[in-house]
Length: 285
Image 1 (spheres, helix red, strand yellow):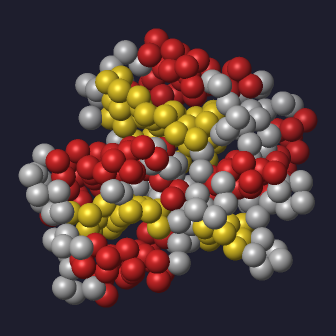
Image 2 (image 1 turned 60 degrees about the vertical axis):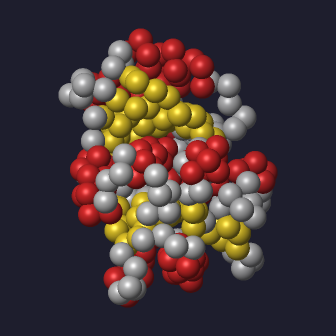
Image 3 (image 1 turned 180 degrees about the vertical axis):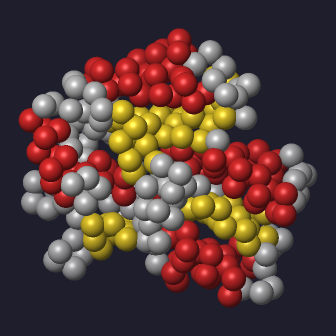
């Protein structure tokens, strides 16, 4: 099979497992981590999650989209290397301007077909769409077939995650000051997801960490029931040893799981959620 028919390009916010990236030559355009002193880093390239967390006491930085030049260069390189077209898979346009920027750049390139997918999700939920894109390429589907199918698949994918502290969501403007204060006082540990517009929203309010994890499982189980089968991706911040515990709970609650993927939360996601993130994504098919 011609493996150079369609190139897959994505941003670092999709949190695709590194082993899958290496095996399938997935091209990553990194989001940027920006500090108030003017220093800027490429997520997963020039700053790691551990390095980022180590600097949280001095400052919680901001994130920004990958450089437009980097996105354009990824398209140009794919064309130069002999690919017939490319698919760009982006985190939610409701959380980042990455998707819209990639789309504008793609529309300016007239001699190389490019399809841009807005996953309406973030992290491993978007990463599962990248993995599905590779499956469809391996099956021999055309770019014109793959793009719309991934749009539909994105609607059948949900992410659920919990964080031990609401502090970073507040600092990033993801929740209000009032919600932060009340939540902290009452030990609220909400389960977060992305809504139909791809923006962070609270899917379930729980009190205490274990109830938050149980809430994740219940939400994913209810979502999975509408499908014959589901793929699951588990994502945690390091250091964390909860992967096996999460897998066991998910298997018990969601019997139609066919496979699991595991990945450490990337730097750009940790900026928004802080350390200690535990979450997973369900891809129904």
